Image (cartoon, rainbow, N blue to C red; front, side, top):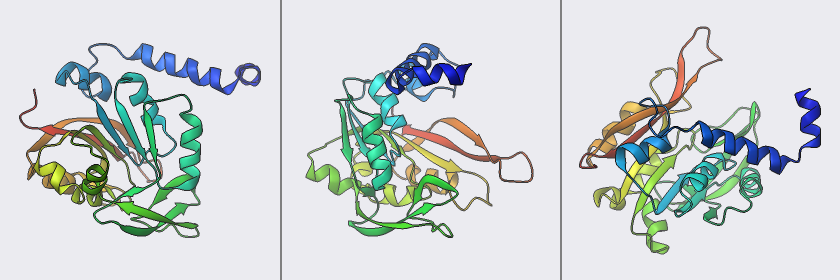
Length: 244
């Protein structure tokens, strides 16, 4: 029945309904660690002006940011050509999103982006997928990109770069030292067998040097490929320890 109805409903309408339902579920005071956007509002009382989505994929997180913070300027970084085009199509009409086809790293250079044939929409610089295709991409540091584009502060930065998160941080030394990034949320893992995700310990130890402390955990994902139930990855958010 649902499949039959979908055939008569335009994709844009289905997307709008889905967004409305998602936003309706977002309560003003959710349980702790369940909804990052709501907790940024309720716990930090933050009204961001600049948001960086590093590793924006096909734009779903950038879309959530755009809906939740229409006054913010959102920079969506996605180096994969295929994902970049899909992201632009998904975010048609979001006038506050700047699309940037660059990878974020610890140096201004070029790299080979590997596409995983088992997960066609996933791509990584940190890992080469057996039997996958590759694409040459350009990389830039956050410090240089912000300097070149006169961006003095990033209020929220999300990083999901499939194991390349540390390189993104190391390219933001000037911003981190100045406390110019308010909230940092990144995909990490604790499983020592995980070779596709950045270690929470490595990520947090690095941020501690600059005065950042853990804010919360979000979006846990079970490892369905392992022999038993175990946590595959999750998002960890950090704020400056003086944040109110």
